[in-house]
Structure formats: structure tokens, C-alpha cells
Image 1 (cartoon, helix red, strand yellow):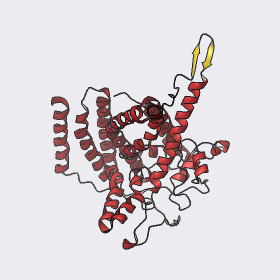
Image 2 (cartoon, one colour; image 1 turned 120 degrees about the vertical axis):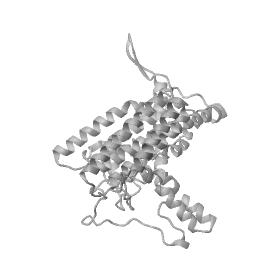
Image 3 (cartoon, one colour; image 1 turned 90 degrees about the vertical axis):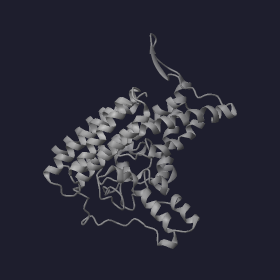
Image 4 (spheres, helix red, strand yellow; image 1 turned 30 degrees about the horizontal axis):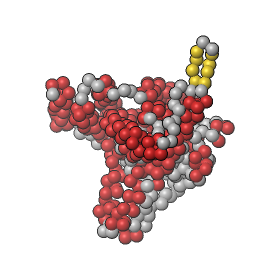
Amino acid sequence: MQGSIIDLAVPFFMILIGIEVFYSYVSGRKVYRWNDTVADLSTGILFSLTGIIVTIVSLWIYENFRIFCSLQTLFGVPEIPLGAPVWWDHVGIRWDFKNLCGWFFVFIAVDFVYYWFHRATHEINFLWACHVTHHSSEEFNLSVALRQSSFQRIFEYAFNLTIAFCGVPWQAFLLAHGVLKIYQFWVHTRLIGKLGLLEEILVTPSHHRVHHGRDPKYIDKNHGGILIFWDRIFGSFAREEEEPIYGLTKPVTTFDPVYTNLHVYEEIGDLMAKVRSWKDKILILLKAPGWRPASIGPSLLPTEIDRTRYAKFDPIVSKRGKILGVIEFFFWAILSLLALRFFKSGTVPVWKLFPAVLYLIYGFHHTARVLDGNARNSPLVWGIFIFGAAILSWILFFL
């Protein structure tokens, strides 16, 4: 499997996170907590592992949809010119206006569709379930950008079929979408203030801090990926006044990446089980998060936060527990990176990814229990790890 532009950017992400950690330390601004950062990175790794299968299947669907259902196929619309827009030869720098317009259209289309997908994930409950993971941190820093839901890409690629309908080949789509995702990384920071004129054109750290705020006036604002004027046009824009309080209106009290990926699905299931009407069951899926049918009580609305009493979830863990948690995390992270390298190289069949991912999910889940102060380092737990490693090794190297 060929790597993407995002794969090339990951080392730079890690370097920038390191720089932000260092700067926040020397400047006395505490924007990182070890437990929250480990949770961010664990969730990001699981996102990458599960994303292999999702991306392969989604791009296959995308390209076949383009081939058989695009404007070009159905109505004979001319192909989008996507040759080199600019190049250098013996004459000097040259450019092709048609190709430049073609690429401009692709990037604008990707950003536009992303705006509506992102907005839908905040306004439709079952889509919120695939995005809530990203908002579950009570911090706001570069590592939070990597805290992504393992399920989000499934629904995001469904929205992107509209781009396939326009006739954009998957290679061009993936490049533009990768650029958008890379751009979004740097706006997850508290250390950059407002940026003057750029605030009127682009999504900036100030705009995105608003997006991650749980204050009532900031909720469901600033959904743009690169350009902020979609929010201005469609009425979802808000300026940063005071710095937000970050996270969910109902904070999660765990650093478990498995729980943060699944808890809203569990809540939706519980709500649907409480109502008898099929109409209400469907509305629970399609209405905004917090909506409730009258039969089970009033809808949940965000309330103002008392900043003088607000405290982040930050359990007390022994020094031994902290060391164990960090060591565990690095162990699972290294195994995950090796697994990703094997599967993307094409030397290991993709079906073998499933037991590897299950094993690593259990590992990161246990690390989270250490961070939460709830882990039991019993012989049974380590027996499960060792037995799982033996079974996984047999599957990977002998089957």
C-alpha cells in the first residue's frame, strides 16, 4: 500500500509537538499533561491502524463511483484538467492556466465538502459519535490534533463521493485532502495569538480554539478546514473573545482511547432502547446531540461554566504508575509503528491486520487504565499479554 502525504508529515508533527512542549515549559505556560498527551497519541495510533482497511475500501468505492457515476460518465462533461500547473524548463518557470484552474477547483471542493461534513458531525447525533473523540480532550495543543476517531473516515469518505461525482480522480482527491489535514494540525495550539488579516481568510489557531470550546457561545462554531469564509457565509462563525474551556459539555473521566471512540454509540443505543416509537428512535440518530424525545425528558442544553470551580479530570497516579504507563505506551507505540510499516509495505496480508489491531487495542486500553489509576498488574494481565503476543507472532510469521 502506497504511503500518503500525511505519512510524510508525521515526523514533522512529532518534531513540532516536541518544540511546543519545550516552549511551553520554558515560558511557564502549561499546555501539556503527560496523561492527556499519551491518550492523544494512543488514539491517533489506533486511528492509523484502523484507517488502513477503511482507506483501501473507501478509495476503491470512491474511484469506482467516479468511473461509473461521475458527471463525465453520465452527462459527457469534459474531464477536469489536472496536469502540472507549474513547471521549470530551459525557458524558465512556466504555467498552464487550465491545469491551475483544475487544481484550484479540487482544493476548493475538498475544503467545501469538508466544511459540511464537519458541520454535520456536530449537528447530527450519529455523526457526532464518530467525531466526539477529537473533542474529548480538556487540553488544546498540537498533540490533540492527532486524537481522531477510528470511525470518522468511514462517514467522511461517504461525503467525499460528491467530489468523485465531479470527476476528481482519487489521487488528486487524496493529495488535496492530505494537504487539508496537514493544515489543520498547526491550528491546534494555544501559543499563537490572533493573526491580523489572516483571521478574515483562513482558519487560524484562534478560530479553532473557539471550535474546541465547550462554552455555550462557542459550541458548534468555526467548522472550516482551511478557509474560514464558509463559516461566515453559512452562519457558523464566532470570534474568540476570552479563551475557551476545552472539551465536552459532559467530560469523559478516562484516558481510554477505546472508550472515547465508543461511548456516544453506547449512549445512543441506551436512548433508543428507552423509547418505543420508531420515529423517536430515528430522530435520536438524526437530531442534534443532546436532543431527547418528550417521552424520556427534556433535551440537554449547554450551560455556562463556573471557571472558579472548574477542574480538569486529572487523577492522582503514583510515580511508579506514571513510569509504567509511559513505558507501556512506548512499547505499544513501537509495535504499532512496526505493524503499520509491515502492512503498508505489502509484505504481510491485510487480513492479518485484524488480530494485530485487536491485540494493540487491548494494550492501549490497559495503558489507559494505568493513566486513570485503575490498573491491576496481576499475573493474569501479563499472562494475557504474553499469550496474545505468542498467538499474534504465530499468525504473522507462520500462517
